[in-house]
Length: 339
Image (cartoon, rainbow, N blue to C red; front, side, top):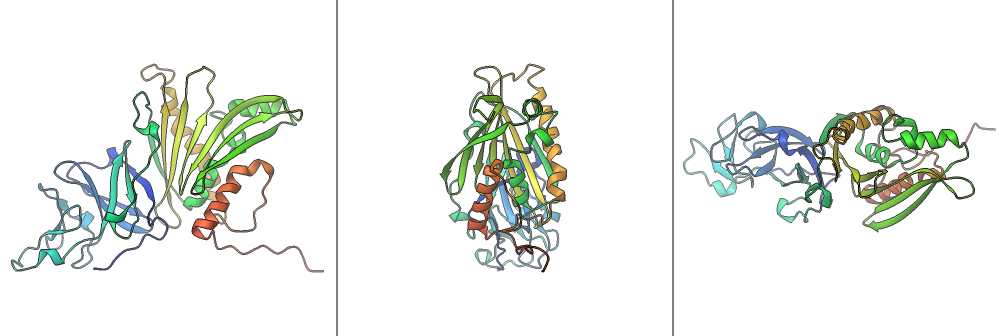
């Protein structure tokens, strides 16, 4: 069997689709880290993923059908495979050794309203899936928004981790208070306190201060969950209220990423006004789109970009990305004209 490799996500988990997108009895064709995959549910509703290629003649399994026994059947010659990739039947070949034939399985878990994939070479060797507590803990609720954009996943997550862009890109949503403070006090600074959380991850609190150190308004926090996830705390005026955004930038291809945003809050589940937060989630995400898709190069480069003290979180991500994935491929720009 030819083995497809996942160059970026070998050993890493990332959500790939919302659970609601995978219907019972219907194969779902996707691309994960440049590899075509097919997701389907077995007869008990458990989600499975295979590389989207029949080992017989390489036809996509996703154009086939899910049988009543939960196996996916190739549309070309009727070969069928279970969620573990094992062959269930090979029509017209009663003496075929089923144990010697298999499709390639991809480690799959379903949690928090999302379906997660891991690019481990052997699906059985995938590490345990760790997710933010608020995805499933009682008393937390919100919405899931999924968008596919033409950008490299590294640029997407770097943009999401950037605090300094909030008043300029989100002045009518999460950056309103930040923008007002910035407009009222031209000398305001962004104070940031970054604490490593292991494996290249970090949590950073931030607040606006005047030159004399006095508070100037907005404050919040952002956390990076390697390799492609983050959480953002949205400031709330009322004590005890917490509103979060969990974001993953999943690699589909080298030029396309999937933005998966899960909003979570612990207040106003049925109240009309708080539920506006759910409607605001796609708005916030859409405000970031043009900056992501117009950045060149799309992949975060190893050199050639100017940074400032307000870029603490994005600098930390760049260091992680270069160490973990070798960074981009851009060479250093010329220092200046000759002579």
